[in-house]
Image (tube, rainbow over all chains, first blue to last red; front, top):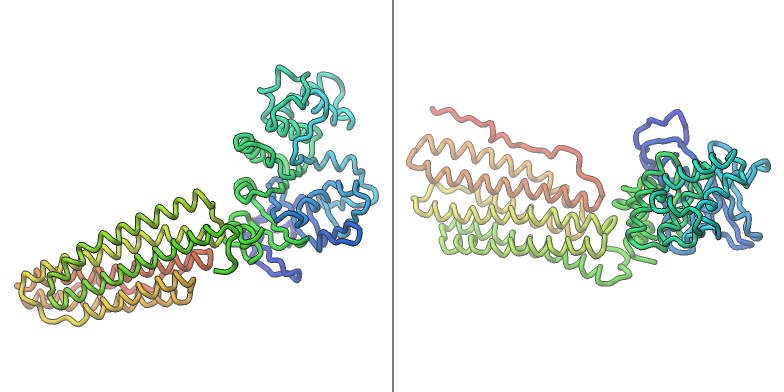
Length: 280
Length: 236
């Protein structure tokens, strides 16, 4: 299923794998994140069961599912945020560009620059707009001096679609911005350290429709240069922004496939029932 | 279908949409029957009734379209719900055309009643019954998500096409034998053509039902036997 030589293959016909999930792949692309048989436990409680999925490069993959289904838990595995939870145990493999991120000699700090994260509630640092962006590159040693830093701050804010609104007040606190602006600031902050993957956990939940639309537009632009994984409660948002969608339920990855197919003709009844509002 | 929606009014709307389509289809079936009957019996009153009843079918199309559009606004339907809503939107105008063909048969009956009767043609009532049954079956298939039944209708159309082809030849022959019958025979040709077109529309509806149930369009070419388009009958 993941033969890189097949990158120009036509659509693969759906196959039923032993886990009982159904998978139909969109036209083959390079895989950025390759997860195999991922189990996650919180103490004795199993939160995720044998999750296997390929996240395609430079595409948006959406995780959907009811509350408590494990989608955010799985998202946090991809940048090892779950390491910060004592009782959390992760098994299986998650590889980025073929390299297992749970390997002993992986620098987790570096990983978290490579795999950025944006959260549901915007969480800018209690610093100036400028320093919010500059902080990461400075501590990673990515910038040589002020001029370098200025350039990076400007380009990050431009890429996040925020530059015009804040260019005359970079010294003001990040927390003084509106919700939508704060979220774009957080995205700019994530971009500044040159990630390859950006994880977004319900990035628009706290935002109004206009701010949401601007973030969605931004996501569309960003995917040309980054691989994006987004957890969302909005079916319509997943349908709008993503190319691949994965449905989680009770810790199981029930179905994954091309977004158009999942939302017009899903294969699994559980998927259909969830997306059509037949169970919460 | 299966489990109910959490929001009950969504289920109510989907059911209402189905009911409206069934009602519209039922009316169209009645119209076909009435029109063919009126033709056979040279019944001008029934023919006129057919012509006037058509507006009820048109009104239902409007109602279906409005409901479907509001459902898109309110529910943003997905998956099977989306396909069902889209199917209703596609089927309503198809049934409306069936109604128009039945109405046209009514008009032709009024015209035919002004000429002496042509030799009795058994083929037309047979065709009419067949087309009516196809419409009934395909709308049953829609209500019951029965893709096999829809497919059967899709395949039956070839038989209707065959009947039309032979009737076409027969009418051409009459016209050549007796030029006084040309007016009447020409009207009958159109009647036969209308019935044949009703059959075609039933297959279009079958294709929509297939999409509704399977989520994919029927990609094969329908078995079509329309030779009448290229038929030539030489005078003796």
